[in-house]
Image 1 (cartoon, helix red, strand yellow):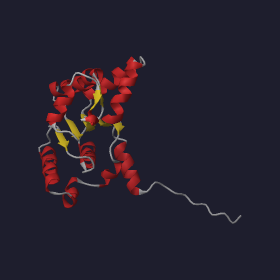
Image 2: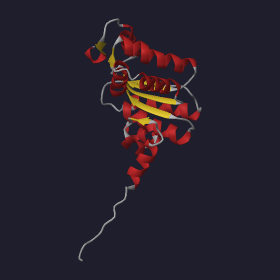
Image 3: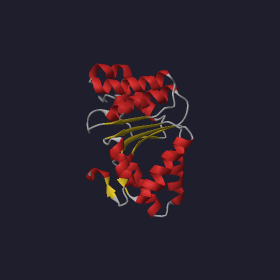
Image 4: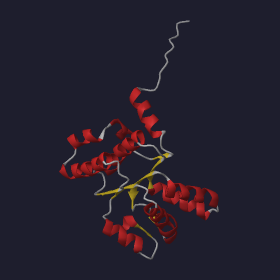
Length: 193
């Protein structure tokens, strides 16, 4: 027969991305960012982003468990930077890792609690609280109601602070704007601010 048989395998860069993503228990990171190193980012970022790179480099250099809060307008590279940084952490530090996009993850946890899937809710809550390294993308953009604020976000962040577990954030909102959103007593979406 005149049939040609071709075998295609995963390309090297996709394989590298997949191997890094597989180190996370949950990975909502920008996997294309896994192709970069933090030092490479300095060449295509403006001065304000270089300050963020400097802070990330300090965390790395000092092998610190210090978290970081990166905020700014939408579409400026916060998630990309956090993804590059998360790659560094998972490839060089021992532990377990979560990279969560809160816009999707918090609503799924709220749904678990509403539909009486308490076991799954408690497992996810415990994981968020106790994971060695937690990367929270789009903080403040998740649906906020009293339950999600008090039973998830505050519960997780208070536990992590008490136990000195690093948490790394990106957000469109300054800390002042977040404070207002989390101390608000009525249910609403933060995107309406």
